[in-house]
Image 1 (tube, rainbow, N blue to C red):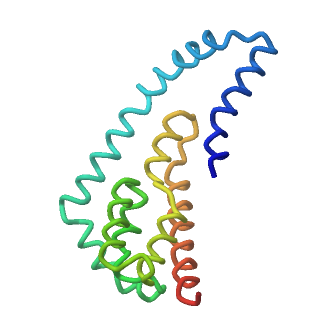
Image 2: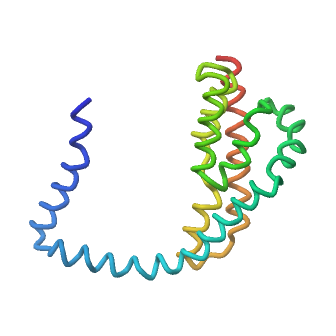
Image 3: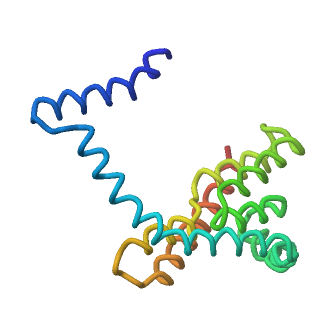
Length: 170
């Protein structure tokens, strides 16, 4: 197990030695890369701020709870437990919010329960779609954000349905 702790330092050492063999000035290349990151950060910041504010507003306004209640019959029909619907709704917006919800579920129902197994599978099989989309689309010229979001959300829903089904039969 302690060998795994050496992977990152060895990777850095390997890159440094490769750069030295190619006669690359590592520090100069690093500082040049940092200079390129500043405009990227400034470009991404408005999108990130919007995502964080909308996530907080979504939760604090009570819209999240109302949406959970509204979608519960459809999700339960698809085999997804009612208790994890909020996790599935929050995950595309906020990874830290989804982690907090998963922790609450683990404390409430226990790690070996069907609900928590489903929650863990759903958590691991999806991504923070809006966060990743904001970062990606802030840096590229492509502007078909809606299509990417719809496809990502459909994939996350399909993964949740399949994951809960597999948790039920295993």
